[in-house]
Image 1 (cartoon, one colour):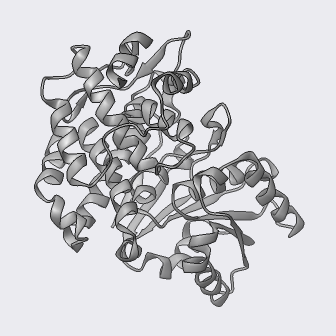
Image 2 (cartoon, rainbow, N blue to C red; image 1 turned 180 degrees about the vertical axis):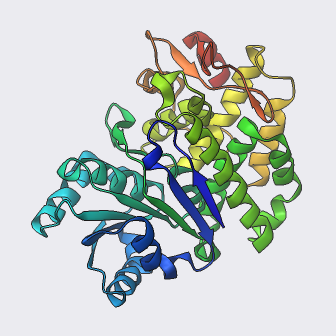
Length: 368
């Protein structure tokens, strides 16, 4: 299955998302078609490198493609400037030139870091995303957002750098731990909330089959979520200065990112987003933005997917608000949120924007 991301601003940067079982095995062919290069820097983390990295490099070598594996320690806390610098320096030492390409092999952290390396290495080289987690397959590998975390906040240094190709191998999900599966499903829930009520209903109805990794159910999750993310990205490639429709993808992320930062990344990204969606949906109802009962349906589905619903003990209200002040959506000192109007539709429009400014006192009340 192939889904096209037709970019409007840079038509020549449009790319395919290939979804299928065994996709990693045909990567050499896909690279030859969509991202030919003299050499490939395969960037992965220490966990995925052992599982799939060495095998991928061997596969590339067997296809007479020059490739080298560059691994960094796994964990969100290693998504830093230091990791970006180390990977870049190692590639320079290995004499990778401007005719090289980067392959991001891993979950969301790997995709963000490797993409940022590609965006900046020798002023920019092509890259390919090979996501290995559900969250990366349906969300973070699509859209060209790359970057690293800094003490002031999450993803505050980065660049838009669209991949030449995304290839999602569904067979990798068979060995995905339950906690990682649930974390990815948080983004699937988000996609249903922001764009497709029928998809949300499917998630409600078939949650048990999805958690059991039944092929048809899980494949539908990947396909529909990718379609939704690709459509939003195609409409608004670079967030239009913060006012474009792409902002709706941040539902749950204003509070979610703050939770990640204040809890020192003890919660997985998907878990933090799940908690963020609970509180932001409640906020939408208290503001009169969302229809009554919206928050309850979202919370119930997240609970079925075994996701946390309350902020961690280490994430105090004052600390969360302080972290939100550094959020990328802040405008004129106001903390802004992408909020649902109902399941399947977000509040806002092209004229007035897709985020809502909320007073800190009201945020604190909901978090409390």
